[in-house]
Amino acid sequence: MEVMVQGVPMSGHEASPAGAATVSVVVPTRNRSELAYARAQWALSQPVVREAVFVVDGSADDTATRLQSLADQDARLRVIVNERNVGPPKAKNIGIRAATSEWVFVIDDDDVPSTNLIAELVQVANEAGADVVGAPWFNIGEGEDVEDRIARAPRLPGGPKLEQPGIFPTSAWTDCVWMHANALYRRSVFAAAMYDEFYSGNYYREETDLFVAAARAGHRVVVTDRGYTYMRSRAGGGIDRASKARYEYFVVRNNWYFLRKHGAWLREQGLIRGSGHEQLSLISRRTKPLARAAGRRLTRWAR
Image (cartoon, rainbow, N blue to C red; front, top):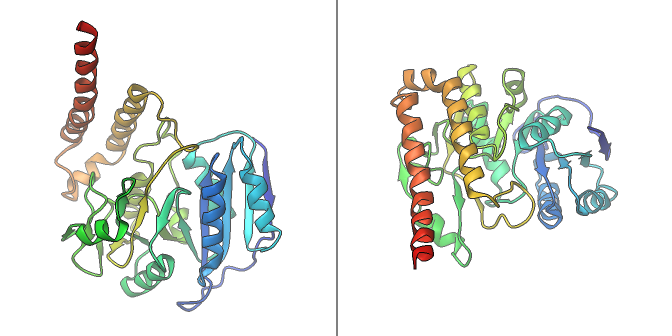
């Protein structure tokens, strides 16, 4: 792998008061130049952002060129180019190691943040004494109104669940490890935990793994009701979903790795019933749609 770093790195690691530019934004991206460029523009427009680090992970499109054109105008943007695709966990770790700010906000290129999300997360971190702050995440369909979906989202004590990232907590923040990607991290967290590069295929559970690892290392991980992120379309780039069977295989494989790694601790905390139960439940949920689809194909073939 060859890595090229473009843009001008910022210096210093001094803590700054709330509201000051104390955040590095890290974004992994692959073959989605439009999304990457829009996310870079957004990051650079945020008052609390000190730098934006984009890791172009083996892209075959013009992502690196477009981002570099923006970096030429704003030295806060740094572009790291992986000549070959190394996958989201490693790409994120590369970006995190390159970041220099007191706080690091990691977001996927196809996720859209609510207004002033980073500033809200910094404020919650200060108020709650938290080391990791996340927010609910939503998968919003084409044509679906974002504001309506957010207004209808459930609010429950504890916030998001393992398989339900789109739940707001009933308080301004609460301890929670079941968030979906897109979170603010204190730099000290990464001395104890990074994204686990053993996850592969569709990288299922790689984000949750980091939240749990941070909590197990003694860092406070919270979710807030003061913001959210959502994804509307994953067309192009990103993770290959062409083969449903292959995708589901990696769901099962990665989930079992996650449970083998953290299951005992999660059960001790009362967060799951047990590793075996969770794995069998996941297999049941994920295989039923595939079985129904296979049945429909067999019925059409029989006719």
